[in-house]
Amino acid sequence: MKKYYIQKKPFIVPTTDGKLIEEHHGKATTNNSEISIAHMVAPPHWKEPFQTPEFDEYTYIISGKKQFIIEDEIVILEAGQSIKIERNTRVQYSNPFDEPCEYIAICNPAFDFNKVHREEE
Image (tube, rainbow, N blue to C red; front, top):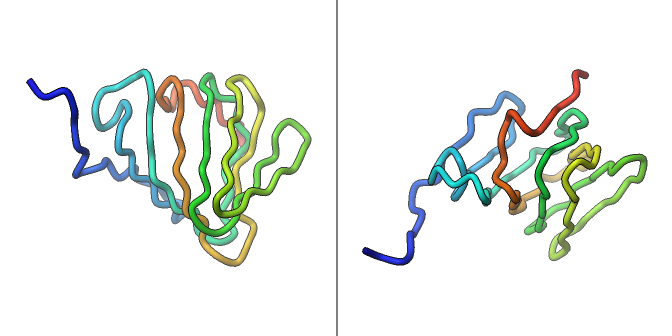
C-alpha cells in the first residue's frame, strides 16, 4: 500500500458567483474530515456573506489581493502573504478589487457547509 496520494482530479465545487473552488483534499474529494486544501480564484468584486465557521482557516495569496473583515477589522492581504483565522470568528471574505485573486485555503478540521454558519444577506 502506498503511503502517499497524488491528487490529479480535484473536486470543482459548483458556485453561482463566478468563484473557482478546486478542492484537492477534504470531505468532497478524499473523504478527509481532518483537513481540506483548496485552490481558489475569486473574481473581481466578489464577496461572500459573513460567516462564523467551526474550523480554523488559513489563506495564502498567490496573486491579486483579498479583503477580510474579521469581527470589525478590515485586513487586506497581497500576493505572498498569508493569514490564519481562528474558528468561531465572525469573518467576511471578499475581493472588492479590479483583478482576480488566486489563493490557497486550508481548513482544519475540513471545510463543511454545515459548520460554516453563513449569515443571510
